[in-house]
Image: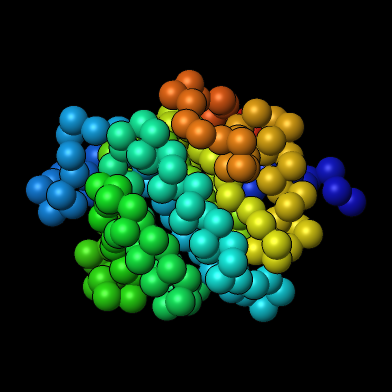
Length: 206
């Protein structure tokens, strides 16, 4: 029987304001943030058993985020992940470096676990750009009050991931980072808070 099954859109998250505020205080002064500029946080995934983050896609992403950052005079804050290959990180950072964009790159592989600025970056972001291969990262940033853009190309995402993206797009939780996007919209679409929604359902069970 499926009567006791609760379906969620994406992954449940532990992110809340108090956790993010704590991390922002912890990293205050360490992230070299320009308080006068809008901040674009770019979260990079990578290869998985079924998907491939190819170098051509990395270059397309680099070109798009660079153009957008220049168009809105934003600071670009890039954080890669455990699955991000060195080649992907190099393509992004080399292209952005040559463009003259004000950016910071936080390399997951060179950061101690307790010094990972992920949650602090979530707190300072004005916009999020996330690669389509990570359900968890997309779910987490969708639970914030900031606009979220998903970048997907070639074989970055599996069929399951693409179905997830479609449900978020149809639900107005995210936007696509396609070739037509020249600036990022300040207006948030909808906030995804499945943890709170499902907790409320469970609390009402007799």
